[in-house]
Image 1 (cartoon, helix red, strand yellow):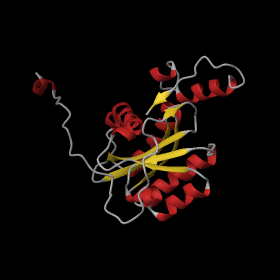
Image 2 (cartoon, helix red, strand yellow; image 1 turned 90 degrees about the vertical axis):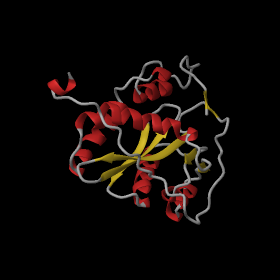
Image 3 (cartoon, helix red, strand yellow; image 1 turned 90 degrees about the horizontal axis):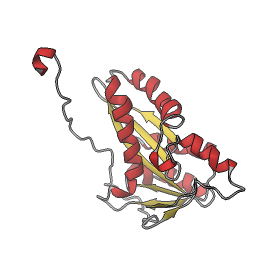
Length: 213
């Protein structure tokens, strides 16, 4: 029936690793084991994923606020160079509060390089890293990547880098942050949830929640 209708199942493609932990940079301890997240800008989780185009890949570095699920920084590039994650980090720092903040990532060279670490230290951001082979600490970022690919990437089948540059920022800023509902946020999108938190900051907030990492 599928052959007669000219359709086929989606082929599971080969996994592409975005983490290079073979380096001599300093690795920082995991600070978020059993951490209770009770506010925005308490814990950012950073990670990288790939987007397949016709003849190559485009890489997306993203930083998510664990409490509100908002993507606070991101960057797109053709390579996995540290500048990719640095650009995402600078975007997040430019628009958010960094006092008493933990930045969590894997042990990839993009997050352990000297320039990235120096930016974190300059803004007094605490540095936390997962142990090798532990995917659970980055579950929040992975959940976002899964949503991105299912609701955007797989529907468009990008062919060029320009296609990605045009669509991904729109999805992150115009759809995911502003419109996509999250059950953990009381079925509100991240930006609306954050606005309500600010509005109720001087009162007892009925939306208050605790996230156990």
